[in-house]
Length: 345
Image 1 (cartoon, one colour):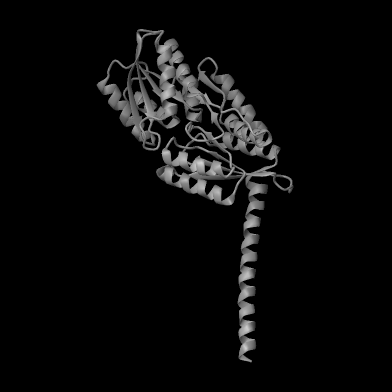
Image 2 (tube, rainbow, N blue to C red):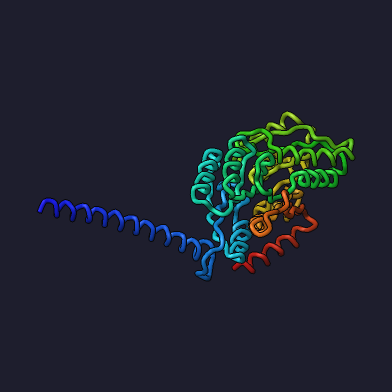
């Protein structure tokens, strides 16, 4: 009798364990289905042909609706499931490593990552590539890693556009300061070096237009205000400022307004934040802003994965669209963005 009870007890425990595993499996499956239908805008229930993990910086304003649209619409076009992991900047390096390990464990078919040019990241990308998972970098490249390609703007071109804008707005004469956002604890990355090279290349043609100072900020508008105040107090001859992020741009705007320097300093900003666009539209506060097409980045990243999966080859660099928005084209740009938003609704 005791033997029978023991057997029955063992079977009961086994059934409970199996049911628990089954329930867990159902929960996971439902979560994937729910993500596919609602979060990732899938209309059909057709099985995905591939699974991509996207790893991005949650604090980066660039990864907004436009980027999501580029990623998700193009993924749906090719029937690809997308899992988006947003990482907090405060612990970005460590959390990216964890997310990459997760992708490796899940054996996804591809990874799109806003990476950091760091030895630890390089080694992790190598591990993942060695087991046959292609890695695509966006926003910041890791050229020494075995990533299959970089999709994003050419920072050298950004530097050139900025230089050309200052040459035009300052009539070829002035002193420029650059306020750059510190990249995850590093003063200068490969991408930022390229941007400075582009800027300096243009300035070679204008001997009276010089780059005087480069300062770095931590994340946040307040930091930009502090740095801009220091530059303008200690370098009174600076009459042009280039900002490389939307946050920095708006921080410098506040300093110029508070100190009545709007008419004395030409500000070339970065990004298409609504507030930045409004300042350009009003005139004489932000003279120009360099704008990146993040929908194009999302779209091209998915296409790069598809091309590599199909042909086992893709271009190492895929450069996406950038433009300068100023008083000459601001109304056209706002109209264009409005039409695009209407189409998305």
